[in-house]
Image (cartoon, rainbow, N blue to C red; front, side, top):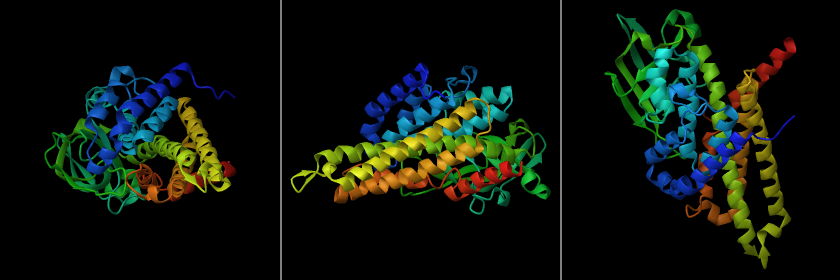
Length: 384
């Protein structure tokens, strides 16, 4: 068993660490306060190959592996969780399904600009009545001549307010239930009948837009169907497995930022004539944080390794996402506690980390759903 990263993986991690420390971290608080989409940072990340990390070079990507992807998202998210999730969704929820299920022509037209960072992608699954239960989806796509006509509304779509392209899940055959769901690629900037609805005012990840997408007789070309008609649910589940690596890595990055700032504060803050880091109560909090974050990283790297080697990784990615996000939230709560009153004030980044961490337990499948996925896999193995 080899726990050593390759030289290329070490270089990617170090590159992302320098970029995050020098260019993202200094503006993270301002991005959070102004809720501004970090367009310039996304462009620079595209130039560094971070917006299509595992996509082949012929389609604009960097042709790296998923271990590199986990390392990169973690480092970016450590500086700014909003920037991290934009990067994650671009890679996992848009580039992954288009590359995995798309035709060569679709990849050239709709994948290359997004993987290269020249355009932004998003993924539209969730609706007001269909989140954890995609079979309740009401958005429809009806065949009409040489195209599809989409009607419906999607909720809570990351980057939906700024995205150029979107993979949209819609019902193409109402009689077949979940077997009647398909995926379509939509050019959001050039599709009549599409509009951006409400942009949510959120607790955290404020620089990442979370929008409602409205389709009112929106027509897309027939060739924009992704894969076979009726294969949308299978594509969706595979895509979400990949996406959970990104969210787990985002959570890990937040947790790492919490630990680093808690350590810095604890060594300079004095009470009763000595640094609070000398008190056992504080030391135990720091020790628990460090141990749990290392465990989360190992779960993530294992899931990424399985994906890189073409092995089943559904259970592993669910475990990694669930554990990393729970640990990030726990670390953030303890981080605020260590800083005391300062942890509750916006003068310090700690309160932002706490706000950002919470969403990691919710999106890409709630942690309750993650436990169902894990249990389902365990019981399936037992029956075999």
